[in-house]
Image 1 (cartoon, rainbow, N blue to C red):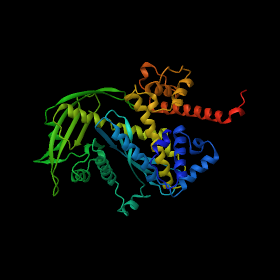
Image 2: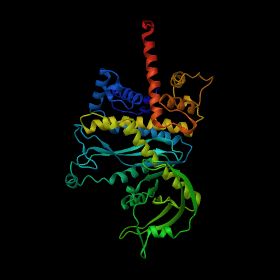
Image 3: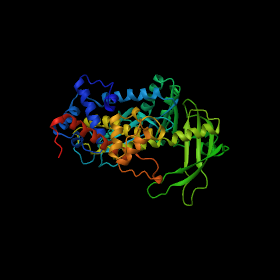
Image 4: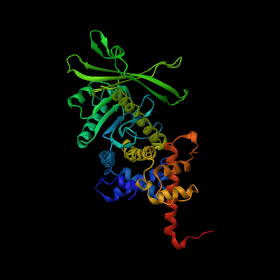
Length: 448
């Protein structure tokens, strides 16, 4: 059974033909994630079948994602790590210029598109296990239209996201789930809901509000008064217009009670990591994290900081989805049909990230746990390398794929990224397709 069929094992569309077609489309998307649907499908008949699949009313985004949710939950239960980070964030999908029904405004009123708010589950070592929730919506064509529709409350995505994580935690009692969000998730209704459910999943959210603690004391001032527990050092990656640099942060912890007016008090912990001696002209890098967990040691505080830094993985996921899979180039005529295609591309984006991270976190695993024998053998032969005597390691095959995708593999290059891996994997799948065609042609194949 290939990966696409395995990932869709629990798919139920009420028709085996539709379920088989879903696996074929998913496999085509993985083979050529950057290609348009017609190019990925490789023939007019396959392209037409794909469009008819998305037109079919028996197919829905929720039904497609349900199978992936089940597969993700299974991977969570199989993990030796007892901690699972459930990271949530929101991204815009810009379909401006396309004649698609049901889209709304984005950051700018003249933009047209929709929003995606998924939950990405990863281990503390940053191995992505899959998506367990997708919250999608489109705004009205104007702010006035949104104000006239009180049923749309965008902050609900964070609360419902936590509720889905809480339900998942109940089904995975052997693991502790950590709900992780950025500053937008720091609002009272979410804190209240987590408290009302008795924290089935722990909170780890970046603080946005300098809340009052009483006696004219505010949260930021209170944390500054605490003794530093320890310091951490790491390299901040380079970004556009800014070089990579070494960062030293001082860690402080405050256990406090939040007492909103006329509302139930909450016992929470604030962990602050504040840069000391930043470069001239640079503001210090500060993370303030709110959690319900009791943090009593420096190691526990540093662990939370490490977990929050892993939140960057969802930004990488968005990058693979939007740049690698080019989902904003989809040309489908309704928002609902785009959502169906997005369900499959979400699985492709996760699979690409999974291969990249697995090669880094578990490099010595046998390659056959992830790749078919023909896949790893072709990765060697395409790179003009001799086949190993036994089964190669996962890292060997991942690096083969990356080199086929343009990764140079020099000492200074570090580990390969997602783009080079998926480009190399596409070449391998193309080669396997050629082998299968040659086999079908049999004696009719003429070599010239």
